[in-house]
Image (cartoon, rainbow, N blue to C red; front, side, top):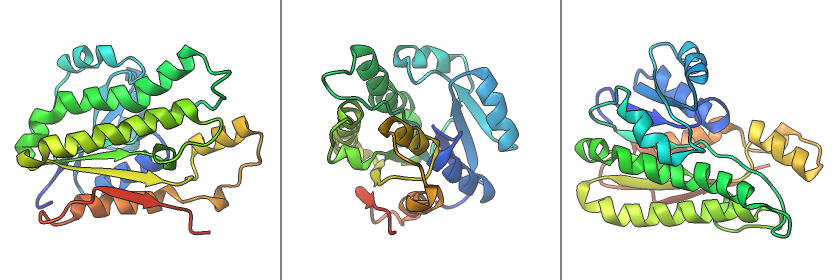
Amino acid sequence: MAGMATHVITGAGSGIGAAVARRLHERGDEIYLHARDAGRAKELAAEFPGARTLVGDLADPDRLSWAFSHQTLPDRIDSLLHIAGVVDLGKVGELTPKAWRNQLNVNLIAPAELTRHFLPQLRLAQGHVVFVNSGSGLNAHAGWSAYGASKHGLKGLADALREEEHGNGVRVTSVYPGRTASAMQAKVHHQEGKEYDPERWIDPESIATTILMALDLPRDAEVNDLTVRPGR
């Protein structure tokens, strides 16, 4: 991307999202960081001086469009990075509709709605949409049904979007990280009743490196699907 690019990032508060935001911020790109409320937006703005924020609750996708209509949005967007996600483990025999709905809203419907909302700006810039998916988006194991279903759905969203927007010059990439050392991973281990050792999992910086590689690839190529596994 020549010149200063503009990126909209969800999930910049921790893990992979924070690593990606930091790298883009350090190289002087303009970043719009999504936050669920004004308090969180303030924290992110303090963490990334000069960054803009966008406020809206991903758990309530129906209200996102309304929320954004009251805020200043970029005229053109070089990349929309869907990195936010929630996980709530449980067996099919135990998970409630509420647990299903929350994961589907945050992990699938909100990214679809954000993409719909920002497509005009992405088309203008011939931009890039990146979905940080999960190994569970390709293969869901016991206890991971709702999360895996939301991430399988995210793959379907990305694949259809890629075909729909190819003629408009919009690139679409899905990244499928294996287990990554993050707050989310600590929660998963707690739910699994396992000891959490971040050293065993992928450093978020390594995933950030793969995302930047996809963004910075020359226009003659597009990374479609990228699976990243722990090397240890």
